[in-house]
Image 1 (cartoon, one colour):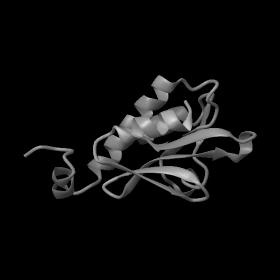
Image 2 (cartoon, one colour; image 1 turned 45 degrees about the horizontal axis):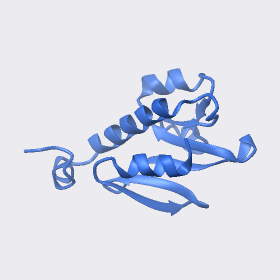
Image 3 (spheres, helix red, strand yellow; image 1 turned 45 degrees about the vertical axis):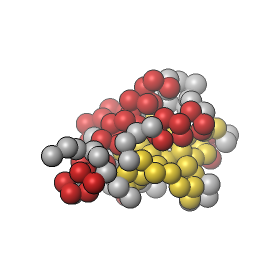
Image 4 (tube, helix red, strand yellow; image 1 turned 120 degrees about the horizontal axis):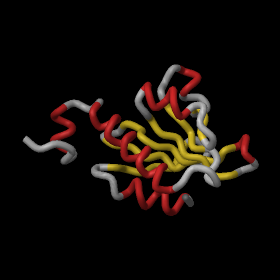
Amino acid sequence: MTYDEYNQYCQNLTASTHVVQWGGSHVWKVGGKVFAVGGWNKDGLGCEAYSFKTSELNFNILKDEPGYRPAPYLASRGFTWIQACDMSIVKPKELKEHLLVSHHIVSLGLSKKKQRELGLIED
């Protein structure tokens, strides 16, 4: 998945917003909370890498799967964030599913009022 494809996919998720920060990373948020970060994988010869929030169960599964690792900085601080760091292994469809789940997890952390305002839930 390229950054253009990543940005296009995240843009189409409900109430998502985009900002470039943290040294040029493509950061996607819902309700002001980060759900995805696309940035260079400095350990992998400058290839693209994508980080996302996941459940504790999926974190424990994905951290040891080929193409994934605990997200630098975030996972070391106890957060359940994974980085897809080898896009020759991780398929775009699989990454899109992880991004969608991350968006959902972060959305659930917003107040019900905020969720309604953003069109994430109906009355």
